[in-house]
Image (cartoon, rainbow, N blue to C red; front, side):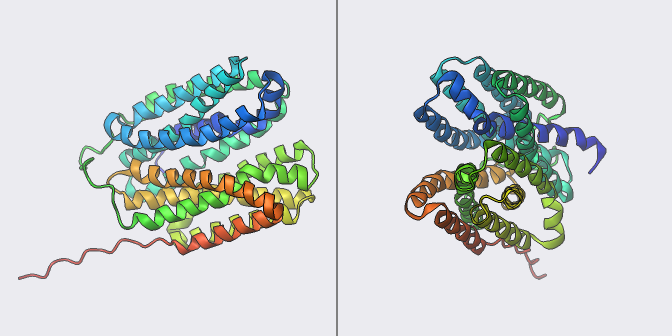
Length: 385
């Protein structure tokens, strides 16, 4: 990676970490403190959870389109500012509904953040190095998750202070992005046909794979904490530790681009889905055993970030002329899969128990392998006449 591209990659990685790890996923870790302080009942907590998914879906569609019209710098800086404003209001909220609205608003930054970074990489970085750069930036999610875990430990009883610090970090990131992000959405020597059709036959399997992974991952994201504390009968501290391990393991996703280049996308896709299936089985099968629980968290964290990186690379290859769309489409399908998967998991737990539910979702992860990547065929030159 060229040194002059490092500020862009570092600022982008931090943006993804702040938006995903702090503005969105840290909510679950701080929820017990927030509920006790603000009086957040289960209904409003559920509104925040479902609203965050809906906000993400809307934001990522809007972001992919805005990047092509306003350029990556404007949208990336906007994502950081939305995260900062939302988390600042969270820190100051004393009304349950104001806090819920602020959480959903801050969480929308996740949908806005990723497409401009994909576009910026396509503008600034040579094509041969784009997969590596994109997957390094994508691994910022794990950086944010890994930071939010210790923050939850350190800020016990001081969740407002933590969110205030998160907001300041997002504001500083916005200033950094303003300095390093490209203003234009295309290379000076490249065409940028925004009128090109979004329909690509090769995108069908990508959409199926991303949706399948979203469904499979929903059970772990939504119910793994309950498995640890209820089925495994472990204290909340073990769940917090599993969250930290999951974030740290996800940093391995930064290597996804290099692994794809060496072993091929399909091989890494199958490996990551197998690891996710194993994590889904292990978290319940070995509930009550700390080492196995943390191993399951590590497997899930690494496989989830690797899979998002795989779909990022796959999507940008399919939509080479529109990289923001290439990232936005599979990430949207992951979110739709998670919207479908969470209530399905809840229903299966009620009928089959945690073990039966997580085994079904492990099978879904394995079945997702059926949607495999096919490299584009090279056009044969026309015969000379």
